[in-house]
Image (cartoon, rainbow, N blue to C red; front, top):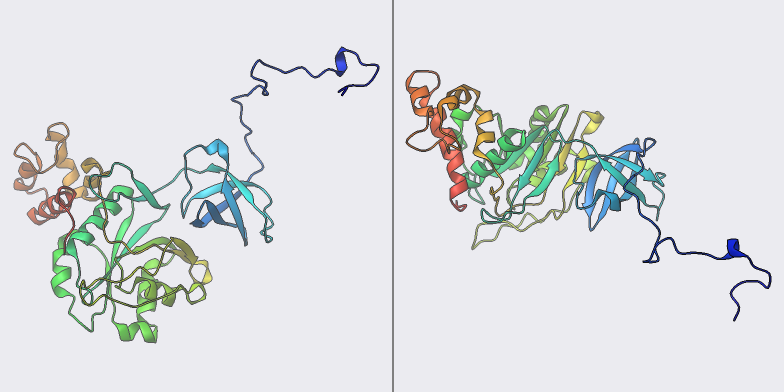
Length: 336
Protein backbone atom coordinates (compact mmCIF):
# COMPACT_ATOMS: atom_id res chain seq x y z
CA UNK A 1 0.00 0.00 0.00
CA UNK A 2 1.33 3.43 -1.00
CA UNK A 3 1.64 5.79 1.97
CA UNK A 4 1.90 8.97 -0.06
CA UNK A 5 0.17 10.35 -3.13
CA UNK A 6 1.18 9.78 -6.70
CA UNK A 7 3.03 13.08 -7.00
CA UNK A 8 5.10 13.58 -3.84
CA UNK A 9 8.24 15.50 -3.14
CA UNK A 10 10.69 15.57 -0.26
CA UNK A 11 8.60 18.09 1.71
CA UNK A 12 5.84 15.52 1.93
CA UNK A 13 8.06 12.95 3.55
CA UNK A 14 8.07 12.94 7.38
CA UNK A 15 11.56 12.55 8.74
CA UNK A 16 12.28 11.47 12.29
CA UNK A 17 14.04 14.15 14.34
CA UNK A 18 16.51 11.76 15.94
CA UNK A 19 17.68 8.16 15.86
CA UNK A 20 15.38 7.09 18.69
CA UNK A 21 12.35 8.18 16.76
CA UNK A 22 10.89 10.54 19.38
CA UNK A 23 10.57 14.28 19.54
CA UNK A 24 13.46 16.31 20.95
CA UNK A 25 13.04 17.15 24.62
CA UNK A 26 13.68 20.49 26.26
CA UNK A 27 14.51 21.45 29.83
CA UNK A 28 12.65 24.72 29.45
CA UNK A 29 9.39 24.48 31.36
CA UNK A 30 6.44 26.87 31.13
CA UNK A 31 6.29 29.44 33.93
CA UNK A 32 2.49 29.26 34.23
CA UNK A 33 2.35 32.94 35.10
CA UNK A 34 -1.43 32.89 34.67
CA UNK A 35 -1.92 30.00 37.12
CA UNK A 36 -4.60 30.42 39.79
CA UNK A 37 -3.76 30.25 43.48
CA UNK A 38 -5.35 27.54 45.58
CA UNK A 39 -5.25 25.82 48.97
CA UNK A 40 -5.05 22.02 49.34
CA UNK A 41 -7.95 20.85 51.53
CA UNK A 42 -7.46 17.08 51.39
CA UNK A 43 -5.59 14.38 49.46
CA UNK A 44 -7.12 11.06 48.42
CA UNK A 45 -5.27 8.50 46.27
CA UNK A 46 -3.45 11.01 44.13
CA UNK A 47 -6.39 13.39 43.76
CA UNK A 48 -6.24 16.69 45.61
CA UNK A 49 -9.25 18.77 46.57
CA UNK A 50 -8.28 22.44 46.42
CA UNK A 51 -10.03 25.65 47.31
CA UNK A 52 -9.74 28.16 44.44
CA UNK A 53 -11.42 31.44 45.36
CA UNK A 54 -14.89 30.34 46.52
CA UNK A 55 -15.11 26.90 44.90
CA UNK A 56 -13.55 23.48 45.34
CA UNK A 57 -11.57 22.05 42.44
CA UNK A 58 -10.33 18.51 41.94
CA UNK A 59 -6.72 18.41 40.79
CA UNK A 60 -3.75 16.16 40.20
CA UNK A 61 -0.04 16.88 40.46
CA UNK A 62 1.73 17.81 37.22
CA UNK A 63 4.48 15.45 36.10
CA UNK A 64 6.98 18.30 36.04
CA UNK A 65 6.86 18.45 39.86
CA UNK A 66 8.58 15.08 39.99
CA UNK A 67 8.55 13.40 43.39
CA UNK A 68 7.55 16.59 45.20
CA UNK A 69 4.16 16.01 46.79
CA UNK A 70 1.53 18.50 47.88
CA UNK A 71 -0.12 18.01 51.27
CA UNK A 72 -3.03 19.51 53.17
CA UNK A 73 -2.36 23.17 53.87
CA UNK A 74 -0.10 23.70 50.87
CA UNK A 75 -0.61 26.84 48.80
CA UNK A 76 -0.43 25.78 45.17
CA UNK A 77 -0.71 27.16 41.63
CA UNK A 78 -3.21 25.44 39.32
CA UNK A 79 -3.96 25.45 35.60
CA UNK A 80 -6.54 23.69 33.48
CA UNK A 81 -10.25 23.36 34.23
CA UNK A 82 -10.88 25.39 37.38
CA UNK A 83 -14.67 25.39 37.15
CA UNK A 84 -15.08 22.79 39.88
CA UNK A 85 -17.69 21.00 37.74
CA UNK A 86 -18.18 17.26 38.08
CA UNK A 87 -15.61 15.04 36.30
CA UNK A 88 -13.23 17.96 35.65
CA UNK A 89 -9.58 17.91 36.65
CA UNK A 90 -7.04 20.70 37.08
CA UNK A 91 -3.26 20.40 37.36
CA UNK A 92 -1.05 21.59 40.22
CA UNK A 93 2.02 23.06 38.56
CA UNK A 94 3.70 24.73 41.52
CA UNK A 95 3.87 24.32 45.29
CA UNK A 96 4.61 27.58 47.04
CA UNK A 97 7.23 27.88 49.76
CA UNK A 98 6.04 26.57 53.12
CA UNK A 99 6.11 28.60 56.32
CA UNK A 100 5.94 25.53 58.59
CA UNK A 101 5.69 21.75 58.33
CA UNK A 102 4.41 19.10 60.70
CA UNK A 103 6.40 15.97 59.96
CA UNK A 104 6.63 12.48 61.37
CA UNK A 105 8.20 9.14 60.60
CA UNK A 106 6.61 5.73 61.08
CA UNK A 107 9.11 5.00 63.86
CA UNK A 108 12.50 6.22 65.07
CA UNK A 109 14.38 3.88 62.71
CA UNK A 110 12.48 4.96 59.59
CA UNK A 111 14.50 7.47 57.52
CA UNK A 112 11.49 8.42 55.38
CA UNK A 113 9.72 11.45 56.78
CA UNK A 114 6.09 12.24 55.99
CA UNK A 115 4.76 15.77 55.91
CA UNK A 116 1.36 15.67 57.63
CA UNK A 117 0.33 19.32 57.32
CA UNK A 118 1.94 22.39 55.76
CA UNK A 119 1.65 26.08 56.71
CA UNK A 120 -0.12 25.51 60.04
CA UNK A 121 0.34 28.12 62.76
CA UNK A 122 -0.21 25.85 65.74
CA UNK A 123 -0.58 22.21 66.73
CA UNK A 124 -3.47 21.27 69.02
CA UNK A 125 -2.47 18.10 70.88
CA UNK A 126 -5.72 16.47 71.98
CA UNK A 127 -5.40 14.12 74.96
CA UNK A 128 -8.04 12.44 77.11
CA UNK A 129 -7.48 12.54 80.86
CA UNK A 130 -9.02 9.06 81.09
CA UNK A 131 -10.59 6.41 78.83
CA UNK A 132 -8.04 6.08 77.30
CA UNK A 133 -5.33 7.02 79.78
CA UNK A 134 -3.06 9.91 78.76
CA UNK A 135 0.28 9.03 77.16
CA UNK A 136 2.80 11.72 78.19
CA UNK A 137 5.55 10.30 75.99
CA UNK A 138 3.36 10.69 72.91
CA UNK A 139 2.56 14.26 73.98
CA UNK A 140 6.29 14.92 74.33
CA UNK A 141 6.89 13.62 70.82
CA UNK A 142 4.18 15.84 69.38
CA UNK A 143 5.72 18.81 71.18
CA UNK A 144 9.12 18.05 69.67
CA UNK A 145 7.56 17.78 66.19
CA UNK A 146 5.79 21.11 66.73
CA UNK A 147 8.94 22.90 67.91
CA UNK A 148 10.97 21.36 65.07
CA UNK A 149 8.42 22.33 62.42
CA UNK A 150 7.79 25.89 63.55
CA UNK A 151 4.31 25.38 65.04
CA UNK A 152 3.10 26.72 68.38
CA UNK A 153 1.73 23.88 70.55
CA UNK A 154 -1.65 23.94 72.30
CA UNK A 155 -2.76 21.27 74.79
CA UNK A 156 -6.43 20.30 74.61
CA UNK A 157 -7.36 17.99 77.49
CA UNK A 158 -10.71 16.17 77.18
CA UNK A 159 -12.89 14.10 79.53
CA UNK A 160 -12.07 16.13 82.66
CA UNK A 161 -15.25 14.69 84.20
CA UNK A 162 -13.42 11.35 84.45
CA UNK A 163 -10.08 12.56 85.88
CA UNK A 164 -8.57 15.86 87.11
CA UNK A 165 -6.05 17.63 84.83
CA UNK A 166 -3.60 18.94 87.45
CA UNK A 167 -1.22 15.97 87.48
CA UNK A 168 -0.75 16.01 83.70
CA UNK A 169 -0.48 19.79 83.47
CA UNK A 170 2.26 19.75 86.10
CA UNK A 171 4.51 17.91 83.63
CA UNK A 172 4.31 20.81 81.18
CA UNK A 173 4.14 23.81 83.51
CA UNK A 174 7.73 24.86 82.83
CA UNK A 175 7.13 24.91 79.07
CA UNK A 176 4.50 27.67 79.28
CA UNK A 177 2.24 25.85 76.83
CA UNK A 178 -1.32 27.21 76.57
CA UNK A 179 -4.03 24.67 77.34
CA UNK A 180 -7.79 24.15 77.38
CA UNK A 181 -9.55 21.61 79.62
CA UNK A 182 -12.93 20.25 78.51
CA UNK A 183 -15.48 17.70 79.69
CA UNK A 184 -17.91 15.51 77.77
CA UNK A 185 -20.83 17.55 79.06
CA UNK A 186 -19.22 20.76 77.78
CA UNK A 187 -18.86 19.20 74.35
CA UNK A 188 -22.59 18.51 74.27
CA UNK A 189 -23.55 22.03 75.40
CA UNK A 190 -21.08 23.77 73.10
CA UNK A 191 -19.13 25.42 75.92
CA UNK A 192 -15.99 23.40 75.13
CA UNK A 193 -16.06 24.36 71.47
CA UNK A 194 -16.42 28.04 72.37
CA UNK A 195 -13.36 28.00 74.64
CA UNK A 196 -11.24 26.06 72.17
CA UNK A 197 -12.37 28.30 69.30
CA UNK A 198 -11.00 31.31 71.19
CA UNK A 199 -7.51 29.75 70.90
CA UNK A 200 -7.93 29.14 67.16
CA UNK A 201 -9.06 32.61 66.13
CA UNK A 202 -7.28 33.76 62.97
CA UNK A 203 -4.94 30.76 62.88
CA UNK A 204 -4.46 27.52 60.96
CA UNK A 205 -4.51 24.78 63.59
CA UNK A 206 -3.67 21.12 63.03
CA UNK A 207 -5.35 18.71 65.46
CA UNK A 208 -3.47 15.56 66.41
CA UNK A 209 -4.14 12.85 68.98
CA UNK A 210 -4.40 9.09 69.31
CA UNK A 211 -7.71 7.37 68.69
CA UNK A 212 -10.51 7.56 71.22
CA UNK A 213 -9.53 10.88 72.82
CA UNK A 214 -12.43 12.79 71.28
CA UNK A 215 -10.46 14.69 68.64
CA UNK A 216 -12.96 14.25 65.81
CA UNK A 217 -15.87 14.91 68.20
CA UNK A 218 -14.27 18.21 69.09
CA UNK A 219 -13.60 19.07 65.43
CA UNK A 220 -17.25 18.34 64.62
CA UNK A 221 -18.31 20.70 67.40
CA UNK A 222 -16.01 23.41 66.05
CA UNK A 223 -17.11 22.98 62.42
CA UNK A 224 -20.61 21.38 62.45
CA UNK A 225 -21.07 21.69 58.69
CA UNK A 226 -17.96 19.58 58.09
CA UNK A 227 -18.96 16.67 60.35
CA UNK A 228 -16.87 13.51 60.05
CA UNK A 229 -17.74 9.95 60.99
CA UNK A 230 -17.33 9.12 64.70
CA UNK A 231 -17.17 5.73 66.39
CA UNK A 232 -16.41 6.77 69.96
CA UNK A 233 -15.19 3.22 70.66
CA UNK A 234 -12.31 2.49 73.02
CA UNK A 235 -11.02 -1.09 73.19
CA UNK A 236 -11.61 -2.47 76.70
CA UNK A 237 -8.43 -4.60 76.55
CA UNK A 238 -5.89 -2.17 75.10
CA UNK A 239 -7.53 1.04 76.31
CA UNK A 240 -7.04 2.56 72.88
CA UNK A 241 -9.52 3.78 70.32
CA UNK A 242 -10.20 2.83 66.74
CA UNK A 243 -9.29 5.21 63.91
CA UNK A 244 -12.26 7.34 62.77
CA UNK A 245 -10.38 9.72 60.47
CA UNK A 246 -8.45 8.21 57.56
CA UNK A 247 -7.13 11.33 55.83
CA UNK A 248 -6.25 14.88 56.83
CA UNK A 249 -8.91 17.48 56.02
CA UNK A 250 -8.83 21.28 56.29
CA UNK A 251 -12.09 22.88 57.45
CA UNK A 252 -12.84 26.61 57.69
CA UNK A 253 -14.03 28.07 60.97
CA UNK A 254 -17.21 30.09 60.93
CA UNK A 255 -16.78 33.60 59.60
CA UNK A 256 -13.47 32.78 57.94
CA UNK A 257 -11.62 33.33 61.22
CA UNK A 258 -9.21 30.44 60.82
CA UNK A 259 -8.86 26.84 59.74
CA UNK A 260 -8.98 23.49 61.51
CA UNK A 261 -7.03 20.58 60.06
CA UNK A 262 -8.28 17.23 61.33
CA UNK A 263 -5.62 14.52 61.00
CA UNK A 264 -5.89 10.71 61.35
CA UNK A 265 -5.45 9.30 64.84
CA UNK A 266 -1.86 8.26 65.59
CA UNK A 267 -0.55 5.27 67.51
CA UNK A 268 3.09 6.35 67.14
CA UNK A 269 4.98 9.51 66.25
CA UNK A 270 8.47 8.80 64.95
CA UNK A 271 11.11 11.54 65.26
CA UNK A 272 13.93 10.18 63.13
CA UNK A 273 13.93 13.41 61.09
CA UNK A 274 14.31 15.80 64.03
CA UNK A 275 17.53 17.77 64.49
CA UNK A 276 18.12 18.72 68.17
CA UNK A 277 19.57 22.05 67.04
CA UNK A 278 16.13 23.06 65.76
CA UNK A 279 14.25 22.10 68.92
CA UNK A 280 16.39 24.47 71.00
CA UNK A 281 14.81 27.40 69.10
CA UNK A 282 11.66 26.85 71.17
CA UNK A 283 13.70 27.64 74.31
CA UNK A 284 14.96 31.21 73.77
CA UNK A 285 16.11 31.47 77.39
CA UNK A 286 18.47 28.52 76.78
CA UNK A 287 19.45 29.14 73.16
CA UNK A 288 22.11 31.72 74.06
CA UNK A 289 23.94 29.15 76.15
CA UNK A 290 24.53 26.80 73.20
CA UNK A 291 27.32 29.02 71.81
CA UNK A 292 29.83 27.21 74.02
CA UNK A 293 28.54 23.71 73.18
CA UNK A 294 30.77 21.29 71.26
CA UNK A 295 29.92 20.62 67.64
CA UNK A 296 26.81 18.45 67.13
CA UNK A 297 26.05 18.63 70.84
CA UNK A 298 23.01 16.61 71.91
CA UNK A 299 22.52 19.05 74.84
CA UNK A 300 22.58 16.11 77.23
CA UNK A 301 26.27 15.24 77.57
CA UNK A 302 29.12 16.14 79.97
CA UNK A 303 30.56 18.91 77.77
CA UNK A 304 27.22 20.64 77.13
CA UNK A 305 27.50 24.35 77.90
CA UNK A 306 23.88 24.62 79.00
CA UNK A 307 24.74 23.37 82.50
CA UNK A 308 27.05 26.33 83.06
CA UNK A 309 24.52 28.69 81.46
CA UNK A 310 21.85 27.63 83.96
CA UNK A 311 24.29 27.65 86.88
CA UNK A 312 25.10 31.28 86.06
CA UNK A 313 21.44 32.13 86.49
CA UNK A 314 20.53 32.80 82.85
CA UNK A 315 17.66 30.26 82.88
CA UNK A 316 15.60 28.16 85.26
CA UNK A 317 16.98 24.60 85.82
CA UNK A 318 13.45 23.27 85.25
CA UNK A 319 13.55 24.60 81.69
CA UNK A 320 16.76 22.69 80.95
CA UNK A 321 15.21 19.57 82.43
CA UNK A 322 12.18 20.00 80.16
CA UNK A 323 14.36 20.44 77.07
CA UNK A 324 16.37 17.32 77.85
CA UNK A 325 13.22 15.33 78.57
CA UNK A 326 11.80 16.26 75.17
CA UNK A 327 15.04 15.46 73.35
CA UNK A 328 15.29 12.15 75.19
CA UNK A 329 12.09 10.87 73.63
CA UNK A 330 13.97 10.61 70.32
CA UNK A 331 16.11 7.88 71.84
CA UNK A 332 13.31 5.73 73.24
CA UNK A 333 10.20 4.03 71.96
CA UNK A 334 6.86 5.49 72.84
CA UNK A 335 5.01 4.32 75.89
CA UNK A 336 2.22 5.35 78.25
